[in-house]
Image (cartoon, rainbow, N blue to C red; front, side, top):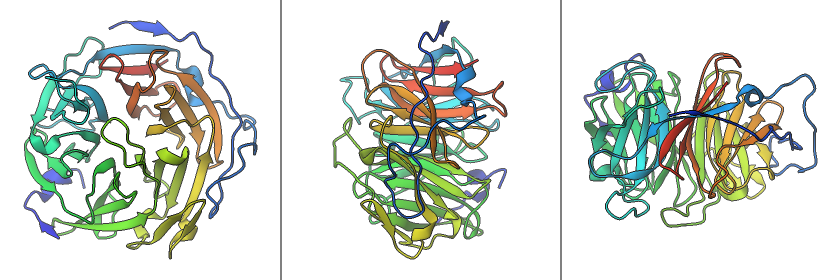
Length: 377
């Protein structure tokens, strides 16, 4: 357990539009179950009286380049949106991480975080540069907007302040083994404060990093056995796209290798090693809290996801650049849209804002041209 002196800082508060020419495609929708993780791909049809949230989003707007202005780092992976104003970050800003270095454009050697204002024509402003950020795959911001980052190549979990200073870099087996996915739990945690969830690309484990009342970190491995391909940087399939829904105390996990989305309900209460992923089933003392939400087509090497205002998820495929909307409660695919008709592998970080269909915006990193873009009305 690592003692820290930054408790208040860490838990503060706890150009141009292009019309989309392709119509949203509504697909067949499989239904998940509590214990069997691979439902029939033919099960279910479009929910009656349910309109996909993305149906009303007709434009893709470029916010700005994500290339670091100093060393040229590129290939944006991690993405989150700021909730408040502090340090170098303003409420509504987008924080991204660059996965590739600028000198040689080598996968997994980027060392920078950038901040962009959420308006077209924004320029990236460097937030941080450090070798402990090498190959950052995902970012999650606390309520006080402290970045927590999963650094795949550096093999650590740095925590920064809002001015870009690294406060601590969590590291060491068995908890941090090629960190890959990242999500924040809001104000819920088994020790009374909060928690971050992190996935590992080396062994497919899910780690809950608890923040205790006295400001300590207490990591716990709550699940093991997700599929991984042991790929090198740029070719990794492992549990990713983590999202936490505080309304239902549920963690959603994009199971990239198996083309499915998994949900852990009551995730705050899952004990260490509470869930064991066993192929198409779940074991362990909390097996009944795990279920497959959706599985199979149209998911194709999905990597990232975002939670919408109504509890729906959007998931980004790397195999064909489709953004797919899912109703997790019903276990249904609702629709999909192509966000980049160029080379595959464009979609990585995704984050959504808005409190209704009319105000929803979905920001995403487009790695084909190193830009941050937004899908909006």
